Image (cartoon, rainbow, N blue to C red; front, side, top):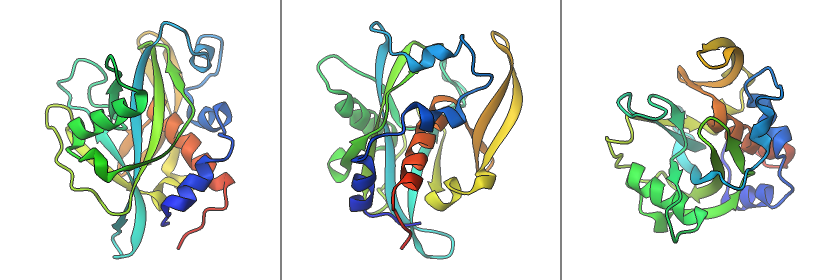
Amino acid sequence: MLLTVEQVAQALAKPLPGVAGQMRMAPQPYNQSNHKRWILPADCREAGVLLLLYSHLNQENVPESYIIFTRRPDTMSAHSGQISFPGGRREVGETLEETALRETAEELGIPTDTLQIVGQLSTLYTPPSNFCIYPFVAFSPVRPNFYPNLFEVAEMIEAPLSLLLKPQTYKREIWYFENFGKREIPFFDIFGHKVWGATAMILSEFLTLLTMDSCSAD
């Protein structure tokens, strides 16, 4: 599936699915304890992340839209080994869009002036870390030259949009958490990597938005 920047902008210009789009990938059961994630507290820490969409040749040598994820090193103190969008905590004096672009440049070595911010998805609160996450969607007509920071990025995962939209990519498992016990966790299975939690919920809203819209494959 190959999207143009105009198609992405058209989709993002419409009302966002919000919770309805995120809920599909929310850890279950949905109860009072995790209901907090839909409420943005005034004292939350703010973070900007970037859902970067770019065009690249797939295995059949056909142009397709891709989204990039990063896997954090196992040595990191927070969220080690987890897969996420590039992004991080807002610094004093910068907008959240600037945060998302700065963090992407730091993690992946991309010149930010080569990326076009197309729009923004719904803010998501993560109670365990007390972060309000502001996701931005950026577009590049070609695959950027990536120079990952090995202190922050153990692996880059480049996922074709067609894979993310396949029903078989969506899976669920029962996981055990020390603080929460057993939970049913929905995730995207991307080349054997399990993308879950806030990243999966943000991605789910974006994919929901595309399927609601009239975006078509070229």
